[in-house]
Image (cartoon, rainbow, N blue to C red; front, side):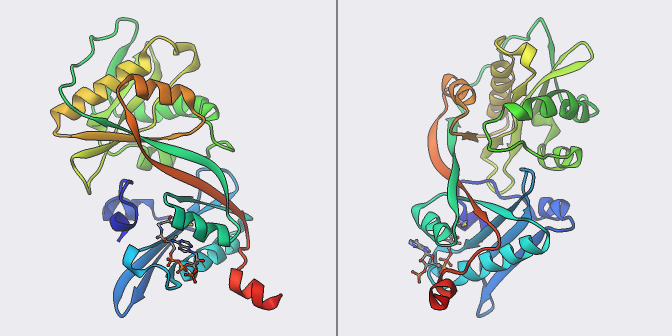
Length: 286
Ligand SMILES: CC(C)(COP(=O)(O)OP(=O)(O)OC[C@H]1O[C@@H](n2cnc3c(N)ncnc32)[C@H](O)[C@@H]1OP(=O)(O)O)[C@@H](O)C(=O)NCCC(=O)NCCS
């Protein structure tokens, strides 16, 4: 259901979904005649003070009110959790039209960048710093959160600061430690880049969070780490890697273009104030 509704996005495995469960997170399914035709997710978002809601309906069951039922239930849950704003992502005009009916407005766009993997040479080992995988030095992943993730989140082109806990970083920002590369100078992690493997489509992998500490920028650290990810991908049967970049993040888009990425789908981030008004009810009341 999830893969059919969102073909461009990595679908977490059932085990990963169980790992992500936490108080306040709501997962719904919609059934028609005993068949699952839709799903819904409400959770806190990575952005401070805002809930994330995701109603999804199988294409052949759309326009029958299922999405409305799901969205209203998710939004009520978000209100019960104390949220005053909600965000969602839409990838097609119909879903945008749906969201706009409930007062969602566009806040940002993300573009998918895709790179076919061919023969990918390993870059020469750098001399000013060393590169290790998280599999080689597992203890460095928590250090990468402190030394790279937290100082670089403010540089992302998102409307408000990302709210990613150390626990989220440990559970959701990495899946295969062999495929995560860290640049290390002395005692310090100075850059991260790697891949999140798609368990649902093993020939694809998503580019994980790529970041370099400010004082190390302009020295090809990110390009080196990304080239290593691409060489690793080629050796592990991955045919395509993809990444979602904020439209305004010119630096990252240019780096990816430089590495041979081309453009794929677009995702529109929409935001609404809670509680949501049910459009028809509002019309009847009027
Ligand atoms: C968005 C989505 C959940 C809508 O599900 P749905 O069950 O078709 O929604 P509903 O039947 O409740 O639609 C309610 C109203 O929204 C509007 N709407 C929904 N889909 C539309 C479309 N493709 N084009 C134009 N308007 C649309 C219509 O006004 C519709 O009422 P109507 O059918 O009486 O005209 C579904 O298209 C989907 O799963 N999209 C992919 C996932 C996604 O983007 N989710 C985030 C949405 S915030």
